[in-house]
Length: 140
Ligand SMILES: [Fe+2]
Image 1: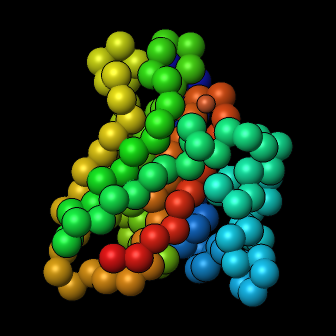
Image 2: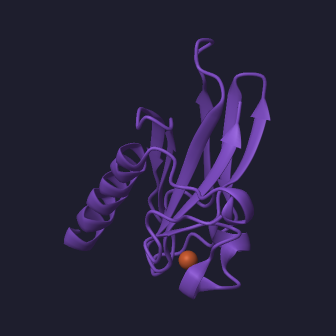
């Protein structure tokens, strides 16, 4: 249980860190590289030490109007699972989150209804209990 609490604390701290950093993604040819938290936050284009794991860890986003669906294509077994998704604005406002429980949630899928006054860049996060914290940037 303490391990799970630590995961959740880490998730919240890193999500807050995105806000403090403003735009964590680089610019130009480093557009998809996280320059603020190398080795802490991973993306499809910057998987760091988890090279080859992006497909099963980077959150996949589907936007349908103001409805956002976040999917992490990952196993959800007791020893290895996705702990949590969050949806965060560049200024750090957490628009929504979902915590997953192995044995209860067989897929890491979360859905969010975005308020009409929110548009532009957003971040979806996905935290694996073994492969750390992944972020996908998208626009709504
Ligand atoms: Fe994993």
